[in-house]
Amino acid sequence: MRKLEEGQGMAAWWGTRNNVSPRLRLEVEAMRATFDNTFKLIVPQYGLLYWEGTVELNLATLDSGAHTMKIVYPTEYPNRPAEAYVMRPRVYSEKHQYEDGQLCLFNPKDGMQYGWNPSRSTAVTVAAWAVQWLYAYYTWRATGDWPGTEERIDPNTPLPPRRRR
Image (tube, rainbow, N blue to C red; front, side, top):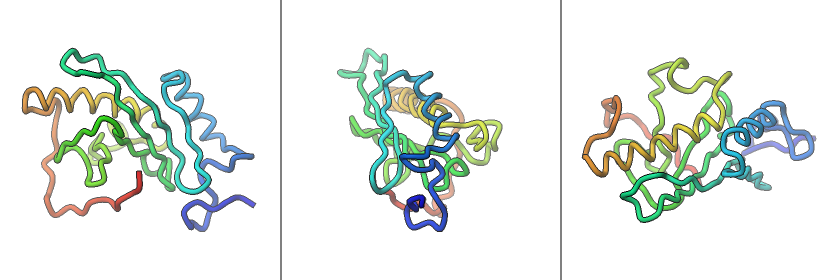
């Protein structure tokens, strides 16, 4: 019998340790092809699957370009995108991160052509967006302007539920 994830009435999207789904196989192959061994897939006994790895930013203004990131698969994956967090060093942008530190990587209003597409997007998509986010973050810190188009956020929009990192 498959182990249920987070109390859901169905099996986890990724299968089990002994019977991995085709989607997770695709995710692993794509992450390896793009990032080699930069990210490691963590399969906790309880909780959500995630990738963790350290990327190096090529910015002369940083003492260290090393940034440890975590890409978390939500229970509803791939219908809901994976979530990206910067674990080290601590970074914060009030307008471009959720309360729990999750990076705001795209505007859902842009639709599947420019945002998350459950049939085509993978953890590679999210990890690449997260690296771009880091470069945008440091540009913003240096200039005061976030590069690219920004959505004007309604302050009454509810935040997503907090997750443990």
